[in-house]
Image 1 (cartoon, rainbow, N blue to C red):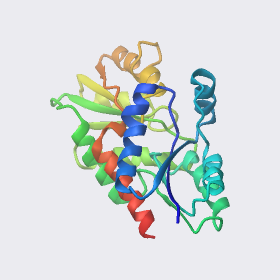
Image 2: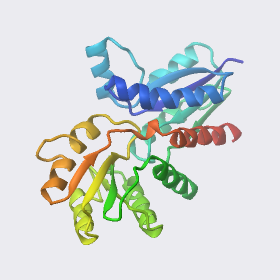
Image 3: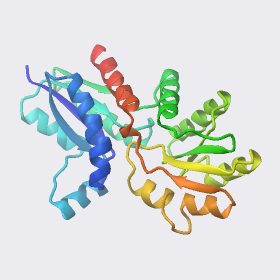
Length: 258
């Protein structure tokens, strides 16, 4: 029986962060399943088109990848999502998986990073591992992507758990709650002198480079600095953290056991 491993992420058009994050995760998952041929898919059609136009690199979306595996005679397929929350992008994958059920002997999917209470605890441990050493008047500010999907509540949940554990970390989101204004209000309340900015995203791509770390007038670095707080970016995706990669590997192992 031909076996395949399909790793699906949002994608990135930044070559360096691709290697450090997506490829690193793919390698960890492939190493855990050496009996399977490994394949890649992106959910972002914008990134797929950009890579095709700029680099002449062809990457499948989830539907194309599953159809290609079916056409190639694979019968046992494991899929792992590299998304952070169970939002719109993950639901795209789930819909495609559902449409292919019954066409393979087995087709199982591993859940996104934050899918259970234990996942939040594991993520917090991984963030502590990745965080710089912080003084009493310093914080690590984590920039999540945010979502219009109801799964955006995951960011506030993580932030609440960090507060509950009295950890010097604050979570915000680019496109939903908690907004940067909410983050700054809390930093002032806690009399914070300096923050380190780090993306709460798999890759340090466009959001991390431009919305978080740039000198543009609306970047988080600029807005926080103008609020009287020193801001130092750490342009490093979660995929660079081996503990995060192990979390995805555990989710895939759980899917295999189903």
